[in-house]
Amino acid sequence: MTLLAVRNLTKAFGGNEVVSNVSFDVAAGEAVALIGPNGAGKSTCFNMVNGQIRPDGGTILLDGMNITSWSPDRISRRGVGRGFQIAATFGSLTVRDNVRAAMIARHRAMWQFFRSASGIFITEAGALIERVGLSGLADQACGTLAYGDLKRLELALALSNQPRLLLMDEPTAGMSEADRRAVMDLMLALTRETQCAVLFTEHDTDAVFRTADRVLVLDKGSLIAEGSPAAIRSDPAVRAAYLGC
Picture: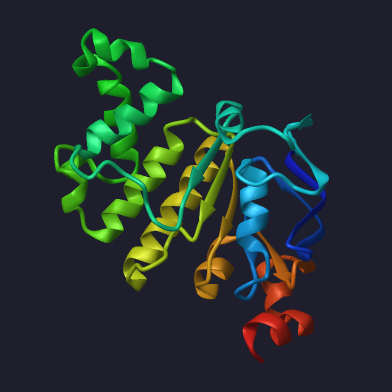
């Protein structure tokens, strides 16, 4: 079932068209990679889907509903989770309290801070922390986490929204090879478990070809190829534009 449908998405800055008539679908339970050389338009495309940038043309449909002009917070409430290249956490708070804060925001329960915030979403946060493999670090301040653990926490924060669509911008940026594999495997396992759709950008082509069900390739703002990892790896246009061979 198609969950995300992007049609003829277009965006220009200062007369320079950085995304040009891009169309693609992402199905529930599917992991789709959006790749391309630097300046291809990946981040702009991502930010339009997330509502951070308003497109000049085209439509974005989430489960059939037009969300093209929606704000990021409204899109989030509709079931879209977002992870960023640089993880955004409260460094002085523990892992558990970061996840609880995200859950409180999702449920619009900020008012409960004026009562007893210490008792809110403890069980739910613990279960999510366990799912991403951080149970042993639940009471550790985020500012002291190793980078790989911080990216696991970022995934937990994105999942705290119980998303139907998860947008991950370079989820393994700056990580060791072992941590990259672990985080991507975790993301894929959680996708399969929940049937959440995932759209992610990633410069590590090994991680892309190992993880993605389907790969979209942007070059100079246009979609030049779409298909299975095997098909993309052997596509002459992709090899010339992105893989350097």
